[in-house]
Image (cartoon, rainbow, N blue to C red; front, side, top):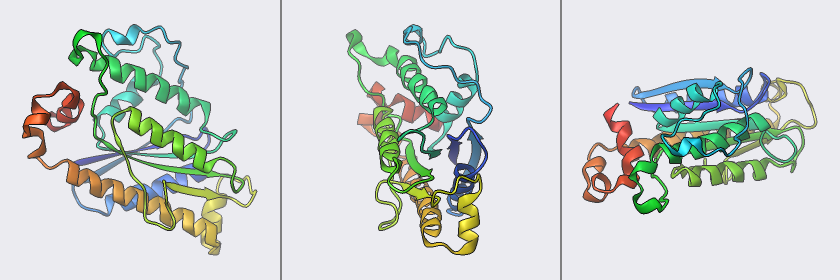
Length: 242
């Protein structure tokens, strides 16, 4: 089974949700073994990391809100697809708060595997795809996609692109300065080129992410010597034992 988690990083219901849902349909179409789940930061309470470093003990964040449930879903997923709006040339604050705390607690969860206090990057080896859209062209979509790619690398994951020419580093879109919640969906129905490109790119990102995950989740891989004997691969091996 391939678990695909779609995370909408938008505080409202609209364009990010639409593109993510279409991406998840594309992911599901790869095969019967694909299971998808949609979650959103909308309505979630997600406090910012205060760098108390308490999570270094056991990977548990001391701030009790919606982070715990979301982070557990993230850890268990094989594929994560982010769909986010561009706010001030970057991702919304709620999603950034989640990623900050996720990174610190994830490292804390596996810190027992690190010898002599020397931090080594855990290899989660889940696949991460990204979708970003905004009201304007050149308004931060690539910056936001790059931030999510950096997040994937820091988390020991594998960022994936869609199919060129439409998705060089992820899927990006804009709404021709229309601020309606369903602007992209309406423009797709009208057959407007840029909206159709954003839709196709979102679908290809999800499809390629699932295909790569299937390749990575070959059951023989966890028995390779350099995998089973090296604790940095523990978060990868853990997913086979669920």
